[in-house]
Image (cartoon, rainbow, N blue to C red; front, side):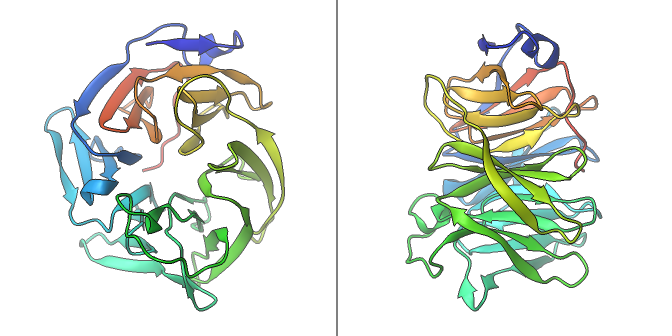
Length: 295
């Protein structure tokens, strides 16, 4: 594994060397990596292929859902149901335990959502998602005019299902993740190339939004998938691969990947395997600090 170490703490978080293994390839554009601990499978999207796939050590790559509405990001709710963002259908859905699909968000204030992109679930069950316009482009979604006049971030209340607009001052909001104590929410902006941090109130609304960090360096790629590991270090895709930040916003270094990285997640029984969705391929490498269990 090629790494760019910028702070010595990187060695105790990721490691100083390791193997980057290509475990599958031949896809059109991979995204939405999510580990299912109950089944030992990785769920991931191939948006242009209009398919959600799964991978396991035993079975390799198989089909999870097709068609998929050109789904992008995924997350498990508190009951273990998969939440997905559908680019082509401009909606957030939930797959019930019996396989039925429930639409959770399609419109706000009478207008169709742009194209929900990435999603997370708070410990109180509330769902937070970003809504850029990438799914209204050809290949990655369905080419059509935008109904909204902004690109926002939203919250779906767990009890009532009510949708609230949290922020609308992004160019293209994308990846989002909470701090370990859920008192802050990080949201990145792909077009502006930076990560912002918001304070989270008890009612779930957010405030602030200062720029927290900027992934910089050589290589292709930008802000997209983003997650926090078990020690509070923030991983975010960026130029050249995955950029790793300490809780104090210092960039510790970059895990370099030979293709543009869109997303990633931690998996296997110890959550120390980092699974990476990168353009046409799926990669895996081992790290020191485990991720957090989502499923």
